[in-house]
Image (cartoon, rainbow, N blue to C red; front, top):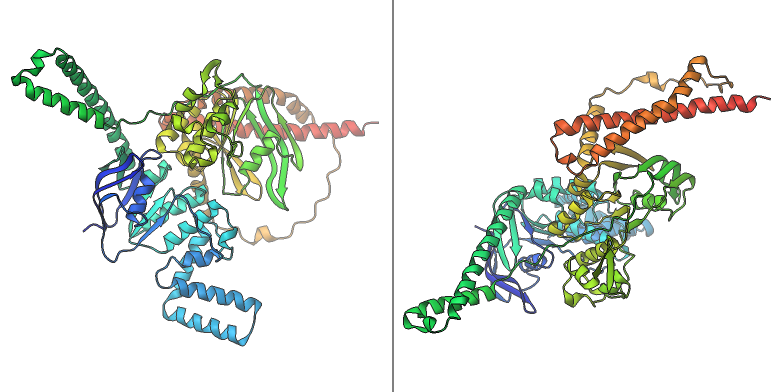
Length: 640
């Protein structure tokens, strides 16, 4: 027996039908991924299922007694309650009791009287009787995993954090059917992985919308495709759905082509006149009229986004060099003693928790912030296209056209002059949107507009800070192809694991306390390394008390001269470094090839392993050169 049934449901906004006589069932223990382009009506379908809106026609049946929880894409809630109270209120029975207990505990801290103590004791007894402490622990766990402070007031948090609160509320309520609309927005990778594990253990049914292909691959047991008002159901995993859907669209194109060819022939026949009006041909005339109506009713898919990037001129070989760079906010280290080189053509991903400093490092490299210690050197002839996380470079009062062309009618892409209207259409903006102010655009439309604005500028350094938010999967994959083929230098901040794997060749991982480590490969290579490292640490036996013994204080070493062997070593190091840098450049050229990471691991593994070895030897050589050179200089400086 299904949980939800839609029977010939129709829904339209204006003249455009979002759902056209849709029939659908959702069954217990399913994990359903709902896919479709932006604006097709995915969020509207979820609102119908959660009874937030009503259909224009048809019936939405919900099995009596089941509970449905819905995380909407846009959160409008305003409340003076704490985050804990908002989350706990999602529980059908114990939520109010838990909120009352936490409120009484807060009151006791500021008003320690016999009355408040009595009230707290009564609530504690009620919770023990209802086994409420287990539920309380569950709420605390979900809050911790999503990085939420239960004592914060809801109305003091930003929109992204409010979505996290409402996600926590939906999760702890454990409904029979959980509806999640883009649950990974504003989550870092650690929180996304935890959410995946949580949903894999979840006993109820799940219906989710996501642009995170890694999540779709891991969770989906069925895929629903919403396209031009109709829903097709695929009882397979996400990858099998992609294969089948591509074949279906290819067959549709062939079918429409054959239909249009026959219609053209019939139109030519009817224009001959007298033969078509003979009685024995009336059936053919009626069939032609039916074909005309069928073509008129046909809803063709809108075109694909046509993303192109003005690649600019070549930059210098060195793009950035950071030496012993440190930076902090209010005594909290963000970057601690960072040494980094970014060379022309490097494709670097930045991975870390929200607030760990990824955007800060980008601003340090670009010169928008100054390091507290150390130096950052920028290369020559840099042309930067910076896609910032907050979309602050969009003017929300100006129109879509003016944001891209700044009042002009034309933009120049790779030396070719294009009318701004045609350029915007290639980013899927319809003509009626050209004069709309940016403030009226959806999140996905603002993202596409930001891409259009930045891609109209010549750039040999592309800096993308969370570019994938609110993009539908089809546009996301087109952006991925464009970035993968981009010949310039790339700095990418993203929590999209598939996107990272497909476009970067190394990652900077923010490990906390300002420590940033560099790893060759994409997200998956780093994750495998991290898992192997943690497994090794678990297997190692802790060292005994020998390490705890006090060591005698060391006395400063006296200045000394270089030995004969050390002099020869110092003399040979420049050639050694030059040879390693040459091999490093050759390996990076190979790794940077667009097809490299699509090759089998047996081919990519040895190259990546050798590149790691070369990088390590270079670091050792640089350090050894600094050490020997310092000794030589100290002796020289003391010579009278």
